[in-house]
Image (tube, rainbow, N blue to C red; front, side):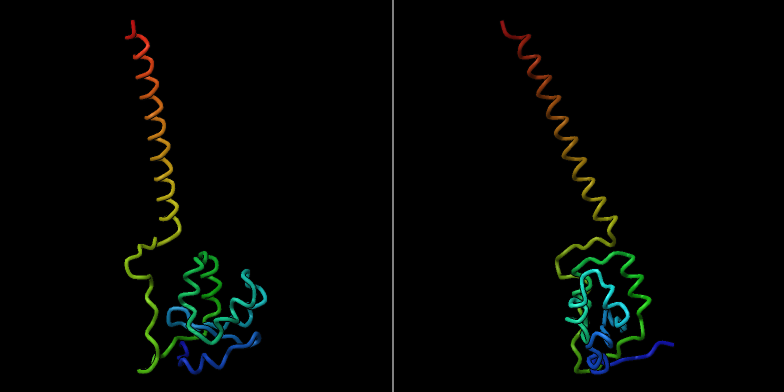
Length: 137
């Protein structure tokens, strides 16, 4: 069974040896990971005791990072009436890919379109130039 934490409970855990954070209303004890974090310990300590949802998503963590985070789960956030609202999953008006392969697929599609368009333009130019020489008297 998952333990419930309030914002004030989480706010008490802000040191390197005792660091909790909130990501999407789940509470994580990142104390054991502070020294291993690829971005450095300062990144985790800056959001220690706080809601780090936006910071976590802004970086674009990998699936592996999300698995590591799941291993650090200690409970859920119990929101009170005076607590700040949960951050939205994405900013309004911004289209966010569901996963990294969606973004990669779009990039490859644009690249293929540019490549195909360039090849088509080259062959059209070559064809027209060849016909122009044979028509001249």
